[in-house]
Image 1 (cartoon, rainbow, N blue to C red):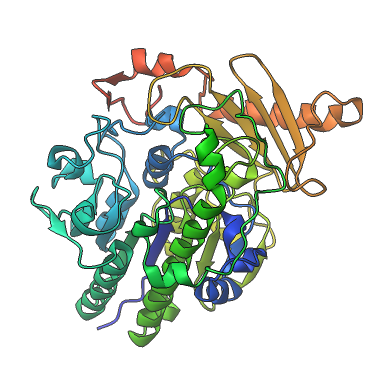
Image 2 (image 1 turned 90 degrees about the vertical axis):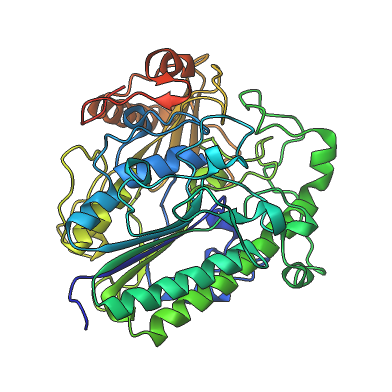
Length: 474
């Protein structure tokens, strides 16, 4: 039995930046399967993770809302469950749903992520509509042994055999087989924990690491030996960490090669099961990684290495393959995919439906740019790190709340963002326009550009976000 409604497979890595893939031009990358998929896909090469942190990304992905409306301003707080989310629409429309991997929307006690109380997401509203198959954990970043586990419908830990991403891919393939046998339309979300740190030899298969034994990894061209003064503690590097950067990159690329192997296995299953023509497949990531660029590590910043992500969408005969210059952002993902699937878009959604743009329709809506933001330190309430930014197909504009510092980069002529053009008279008109666009979008979504402490005091209690009437506004 076959269905005529398009299926959805959404694969997202953790901390995989666009720049570290072969199809994007990285000669060190070993990603033949992802590269082949890119050649068959709509390649949104200006895709950004508009709030490049794990939990804020996921909150926006499933709600279609920006961070000021989800309240997920930092990691390690728990999302309110009063939103009408992606999987709710899927279930209401007759879809079976599967979710496998990292969740990161349920923890509210930092440092206790291995406690079942934190890592187990119980059946019910906390699963945001993923009511069929849910093999997940809140978060962890060690991928072997006692640290690599998931939960089903009880708090019992189920340990992965071998390397966690391999086991997750096995589960995903089994779910594809089950979905195919049922004949119902389905949506499968696979949230892979790699290539997130820790970048240690014991956290990646030795065979994958061996592939890079003769590869030289150099510090980035825009590396700075001093920490960015706006960096939070997750973004700072000490002397020993700076010495380790090349080896960290080796392990990161080895993890990415394993990710590529598993994506290839998943796509082979799609072909073998006859799902390719009627399935939208997305390959993407939640955010990138800095590796010392601009004096930073990690994410949570407007620089390209952190915000720019792969975003590949394939559905043969529906989505034309090739580059698509639209600046798609994470709040746009839910409405765009629902639009492609012919399903209703909740009225509270703040992102844009770019389905027409994805299909290459000549008169389709295409945004002039997109809003980016950081609302605090990565996982603690701390003022002084907040920023807003606007990125279009050529420029990035950003400003910090703490002191009003502004930055402007020409990403076409200065892709490493090494020359700040803000304040130069010849760029005043461009800067003024980008700033106006940014503030207009902030006004549209009711973003007050508050310090992190504002949300802590007004919107969150015991690290659990207070519910607000839909549409949520904090």
